[in-house]
Length: 415
Image 1 (cartoon, rainbow, N blue to C red):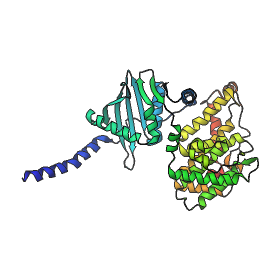
Image 2: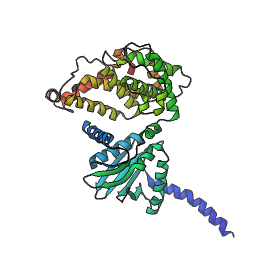
Image 3: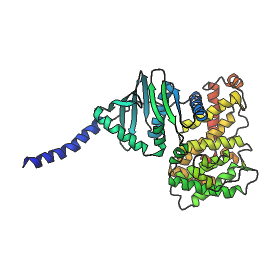
Image 4: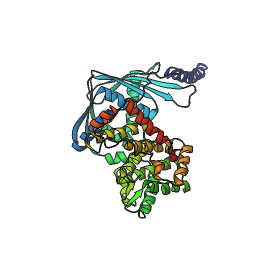
């Protein structure tokens, strides 16, 4: 009988030792994958083309497929790892399988530690199956992987944001030349869009939408962005619920962006159809509505997403304009960069968010939002842009971009 208590004591002692050993093997002091995210306008162009094709041609109930190159799939994986976990990823494709490598920082550790994961995705008659999973020096038994993966899928499916995507997937095929994803889309975008906005965020958006609806009745046919922003930000400062300045700034920026674009918030939040509606006005910066649009779209992307993506979207739009629209304009890029910097400052920290609130609330001029631009080339066709600057990345182009960055950095609202 004495052996039983000793066995229990030994078992209980072994559990923390086993966990400690597992952590020692799993956590490493350096990332095995360490890559920068390098997005180009061509990458954004290809992604936009895929989205447009499926948005316009795929109808509910239709079986469809989209195909991407392994290089683009690898880039997307690395971007997502950086965007959501400040890590890096790499995906190498072969016949009917892919090796995924992922390095994620373990926050709160000093010195820095990393979780390095490596796994093989194997093609099946449906969704790929995980095999050969390693976390650092720790190899997970396939039986454990087979048990954990369904649990993870069930957890993801519990959220409408992910459930709709999982329900749509039918088959994934992999090769060295192409990644093909087959799906049957049954609709449900409204549910997905609404799922990413939590209840607190909805309340904030409603507050700023209601205030903007009231203010807009006092505007003329055209109103300066420098007049639209201060009352919203002043409301945030005086609001007793302004415990999270970054969240308040995001909401104010998003509501303003949709107003500047002339788009209803119900595009992303169906319940907003019943909210007070601002009176449509043309919003300008330095007398131009295109500057206001560039500025606010970039600010919203920077406040809610990744600034590198914000930069390249603005750049991509300018390249598209040079091909078929108004032309490549460095002054539009200046508006993009100014908006991006404001969006960054709006959410960088609580101190930064509060500082920006007081700067804006004290009053704005157009020159606080838009750097000097009259001498920046605009409306260039693609041929003229290449003749004058040689293309993106050339010394002449970099010099112009450096000039823009210096002017943006000097804006009063950012200092």
